[in-house]
Amino acid sequence: MNHFKRAVITTLIGSTLAAGAFAGDNKQAEDLDASDMTRAYTNMYVGTSNNGDVKASGSLSYRYDNGMESMVSLEGTMNKEGKYSDSRLQYFHVFSINNAVTPRVAVSLDVIDNETATTAALGAISIFRTPIESLTFFGRVGALTGKYSDAALNNFGVTDSNLVGGMGAAYAVWKTGQDGTFLALYPEFTYLSGDIESSTVKTTFMAATPLSADRTRWGQIKFENTYGSMESDTRTVDIDETRVWFNYKVYL
Image (tube, rainbow, N blue to C red):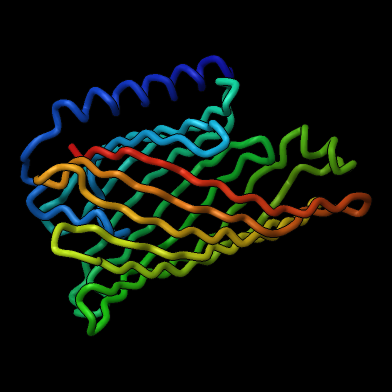
């Protein structure tokens, strides 16, 4: 199964690089806002981290006549040895609201698989405009359920794999110029409950800038710090990890 997952990630990487050569002017590019987390765009990206991981993602979007938007995304990561690390499948649906402060809200369904657990999460995110046109906030909440992996059960000496949890996040986005360049800062809190209890805070700082005049090609750098702990009745593991990601993103 891991060989299949690795093949999917490799295909995503190759497709992203090929798409960059053919991306050009289209209707989507005319109103593209890469900083808006409540919009659905067809896109692909590939990235690498400071510890050698490689991540790739592809998304297909559709816009409805009534203003709603939907998107399906597949994301995968390989570690520096070229082995499967984690993946995420998401359905994302945007609703337009006749409100000047909160013009859009979106709901999402995610299936996430990694070395610790496999989870399904239902979430919602909303945009909040401010009097400062260049500054925007977003708020996100979610509930999830799933199962811990066999490796996690063995590591923490437990037998019940079931878990439930929740997450909350706040995002601040500042557009620094007319070309669309933006900075984003967001803490994300996640709590998992079961025979293994986990709580983490992931703080991300991201800078993104367009690499083409039509804003269909973007470069991103992300600094991520994850801090928290996992514990059972017999073991506690502290988490304090920092990664830097360099991403190339193409909107189609």
